[in-house]
Length: 399
Figure 1 (cartoon, rainbow, N blue to C red):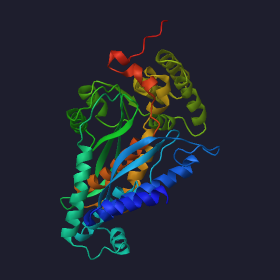
Figure 2: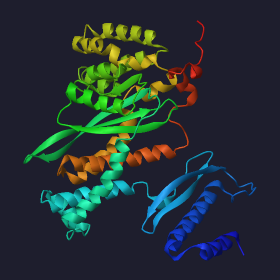
Figure 3: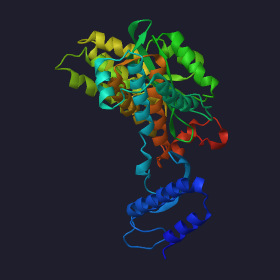
Figure 4: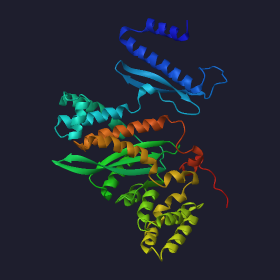
């Protein structure tokens, strides 16, 4: 008799009728994970084999909510890569949130034609307001717990970005900004910190959002990376007392608009020489030299470089290994793309709570995906010089 059959027999003998189904689900799920990991490693647990291509590295605990109840899982970890069980469906909550938003729009009679068609295709035309309310409440509790969780430790790098969606307010359709905050902790892990919705991007809005993060425990911010949003730079200085990095990619798009079609490639190459320097002082010197060379022919472009020098080159004062990730908001592109894809399905949201429900679910699931990745976004060795704790600081290199 195999070990699996013995475990199954023990399970059947000891479990009560009420718990039997849940225990059976847990047993099947655990066995499925073992088989999946066996195929990924090339050998069974504890087996010595020349075909082995990876090794196990312990387990992580996770609760799996099923129709049979909460099942405790021990998900295997791998040394050389990450593993996530197929049956857990990492995008399940976001899909559920999307369905809830669509249903809410439908039952309140504020949906667009595309939403009406989607409701019919999903077979949800018979759903009642009370059913939608219960579904929304269930999701909202999870999202609220995630978005309001305490923030612990230092967060040296903070990315902020905004996207716009349409929502019904006071009988009108208006465009609102959805702000997303992502940061890297002192141990090199990336997390979603929060989100906010506002009618504008004025300084007061940014100040309130950053203060809400600070109240939850945000501290130790060294650099904030964002596009040139109105009021943000002043809010960062007032609330976080941190440096601000203007997104280099967006700045290049703006400045090259003044270079003419034929001169864009040459101008881009000239400006890029500043980014290739070894340190901030050399980068600033090269930046000014390029601006002076361009000034006689494209004075407006040179003037933009003069104004943006400190903001675009702020990242050069940080560790060289971090610079490819902190010079722009590009690390948020995939996340923003997912938000845009899901919100486009809805088109016009019935209220701001529906925006929080859907975008919050997307952020929660993205955060979970980052949490299970084995590799840190930035290594501990490169993060050490940024630590406020002198025990973890590396000694200065003698000149």
